[in-house]
Length: 220
Image (cartoon, rainbow, N blue to C red; front, side):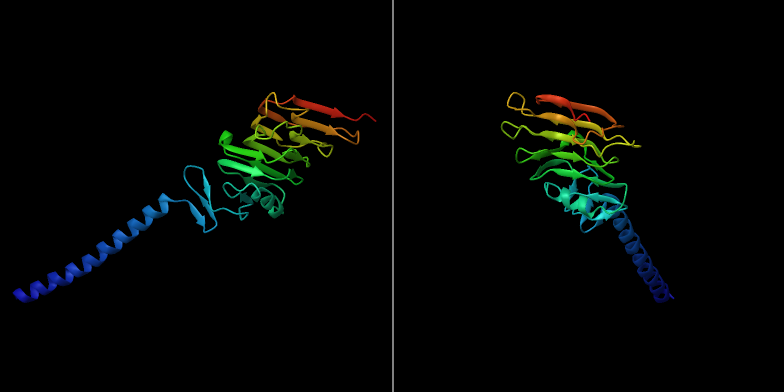
């Protein structure tokens, strides 16, 4: 009888041991899932709001730019094939080698003043070429370019007929202060005389340019 009881106890212990091990495994797995927000092997968003190992891959029509890679902005814009696409820029410095042309219905969004776009030469940083294009929550800094004579943001004559979103909001635009020659923070450029209408901007801080906001019209 004693041996039978011991055998039953041993079998019960083995079964409970298996249950305990499985419970521990699932608890460990759950903690691991909660501790990270990894979506795929190319799209990683940490809880602090910084992005790692990202490319122009899309999640629910939101495209993520690779941290520290300014050239990836153009790649994300080219990959945006649907209206209402949103491109997220991470915290950190993004150096660009050519103008960012927003010629589609795109929202370009950063992570506040911690997202900084630097041009590596004397050229316009952003061209707003679509009525529904928007830039929000980032900083444009041209102070690294000596005698900067271009424009941080340019609205051309394709911006008209109304829009349902703000074009610019929560932006910090920083120039080269006294070392500028004809630069502007925001330029409204009407080449064909058709006019630029229904532009919405809010919470913009501009300093260090010859002109904060310049309106350059061609009258018919």
